[in-house]
Amino acid sequence: MKRLPLLLACLLAPGAAGAYQHDARLSSKLKAEFETAVSSAPAGRDLLARLKKAGPGYGRLRVLARSDASDALAWFDPDADAVYLNSRYILKFFEAKGFRDRQVVEVLWSNKAVRAELVKYAAPVYLHELVHALQFYLYPEYRRDAGGNPVEFEYEAYLAEDIYVHERMKADPSLLKSFVAGTYTDLYTADAFGSYLALSLDPDRYREKIRRLYEGRGGGYVSMERSETLKASGLEDSKIMAYAAGKVGKYASDSASLARLKAQREAFAASLKDFYAKSWPAFSSDALLFVGGIALEEKNYPLALDCLAVADANSPRYGLSPEALEELKTRGAVAVLEAASFIRDNAGKMGVEVLSQHLKALEKACTATGRPFPDDLAALREKTYPKAMAYYAGKYGAETDPARRDYYKENLDYFSAAAGPAPSSP
Image 1 (cartoon, one colour):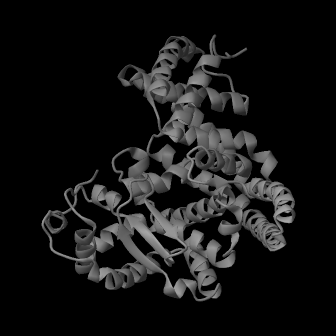
Image 2 (tube, helix red, strand yellow):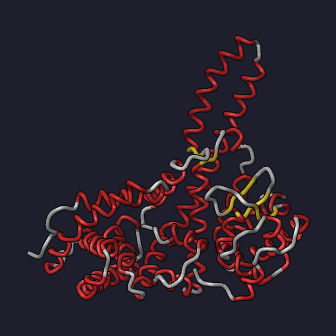
Image 3 (cartoon, rainbow, N blue to C red):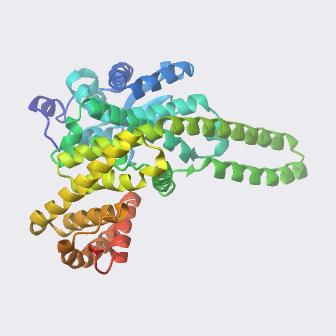
């Protein structure tokens, strides 16, 4: 974590006075400053325009700091019409301890420099929650009728956030370069880049990762289709019970709820389909080229190979322009050659995790693009993969976080299945 200037560290020292009476004024300042940050990219400006067009909800929306025990950095509360920033993570971001929420509110309200630092790095997270605000303004009864949070809402929120991050990084890539090179991170940046750097050309793969993350963590997330199925099934039971008890009105109410659920599901599904159709092809290919180029420049070869070489192999399915396709192929070939050379020169300096990830990325790139795995690295691969299997087996067995468990399991499965010599030149 990059240390803050001494001024900010002092301002966040325990003991600062303050109270919740500053909530309203803090909300006004944070909302205005986040709006400036969000407006710095076309995706943000488009979202703000949609929010203002959707009715009076955004005009009333508040932005507040409150502690929550969950792992959420922020959340939108439709009942309060507020975006809450989790103060536990605000304190971690500033490396401050011993605060209560009223003190966090006081410091954020009273000092513009502290707010500016928070807004600068937390803007993608805030934009993500604004998407959820818009969804509830447009489909106000969905959550009540569904009895849970629709996973599909996250498909829209993540894509909007990733497009915004991409536009911001293309305008100023310095933060991305530092993150890719491993010289800077913070919890908000790591969260924003976690999705952005995991892009592929395949929107189904992108959505599937989101679905597994949210349906695996609980919290009442369920697909819209599943919600409607459960509601319809419950309606049949409700009909029998209502007529038996002489409460036909209850059945009529449940029927109306199902009708609303179906109508709002269909409206949102059409909107989401249109959003992906218009945004995904150009965005995903441009992002892969951009991130792959940055990764190559910063010598992050696993990321470069995944962005460039593997995307190169899948590109015919996604209708890229001839220019984009040619650039992808050229950069993909360069990434393979540079990665192989880097492994030769640095294998002895790498631990098992770093070395295995480089070999894995190179192998996948060679397989995907029909290139032979370098003969002179085959013995190193055979020696490293069993160690990688043991390493990831231990990590997987000890991990409780669903997303990390998925990552460790994915690697364990790969290294377990990749036994034997790598393909060699004819």
